[in-house]
Amino acid sequence: MKQYLDLCQRIIDEGQWIENKRTGVRCLTIINADLEYDVANNQFPLITTRKSFYKAAIAELLGYLRGYSSAAQFRDIGCNTWNANANENQAWLNNPNRKGEDDMGRVYGVQGRSWQRPDGTYLDQLQKVISNLSVGIDDRAEIITFYNPGEFELGCLRPCMHTHTFSLLAGTLYLTSYQRSCDVPLGLNFNQIQCFVLLALIAQITGHKPGKVYHKIVNAHIYENQLSIMRDIQLKRAPYSLPQLQINPDIKTLKDIETWVSSHDFQVIGYQYHDAIKYPFTV
Image (tube, rainbow, N blue to C red; front, side, top):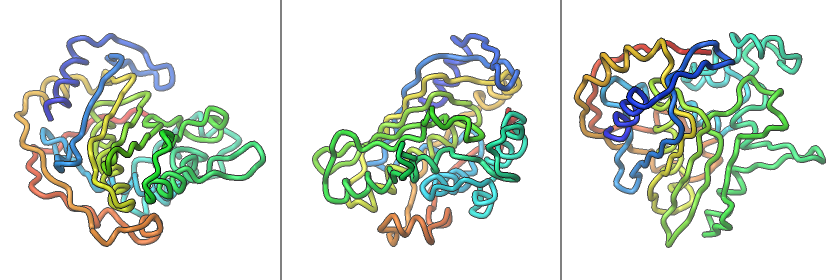
C-alpha cells in the first residue's frame, strides 16, 4: 500500500497538467513509476483505503487469457469494464472494422492468443510461453505482448498494460509487466491485481515457485475529475495490512483456464478495507 499511496501523492506533488486529446479531459501526469509485488510471500496488492472489487479484475484477466473479443463474453464471466469501450467510444462506433454491438476488435487477449503473421496464420503467444516454462526453458524471450501497431485500427482501444515478460531463474519465476498509460485511481487497482495473479497462476500451472512482479508504468495520471476525491478522501485514510490470495490448487493447465476456471477459484484471505469510492470513468 505504501508504494501505491506514495505514487498518488507524487502525482499530486510533482505532476503536470496534460490535456488528453482522446478524451478531452485534463490529467495530472508524471512519467515513470516502478512498483513491485511480492508473490513469493503472498502479499496480495489490494487497495485497502477503499473497497476493491477484485473478482472483476481477475475475471478480466481470465478473459484476456482466453482471447476474448466481445464485451458480452466479459460480462458473462463477471466483468463489465469493456462495455463502455466497446459500445460508447465514438471513434470505435464510427470504425468500419467494428462488427456490431459489444465487439472489441483485435485487442488484448486476441493478440495474445492469435497474433496474425504476414502469411495469415496465427501465433499463440501464451501457449508458447507456457510450453517453454513447463519444461524449464527460458529463452530470454518468454514474452506475451498485446501491442500490435499494425492492427490498432482493428480494435476499440490500444492496450495500456501491453507486455509481460516471464523470467525463470533457479526454479523461481518472475514477471516484468510494462504499461504505457495508467489511470491511477481506477485502473491501477485492476492492474496490480492482474499482474500478481498472472505470475501466481502461470507459476502454478508450469510447476515453478513464484518470485516478484516488476511493474513499470510510463505515463501515470489522475484525471481532473478524480483529483479532489483522491486528495481529500482516499489519501486521508490509513491503510491496512495486505491480504493473501488463495488459488484453487486444481488449476493445473492452460486448458483448465480456458474451460472451467472462474473468479470464484480465487479467494482473498484477511482483506480489511475502507468504504468504497466511486471515481469517474473517462472513456
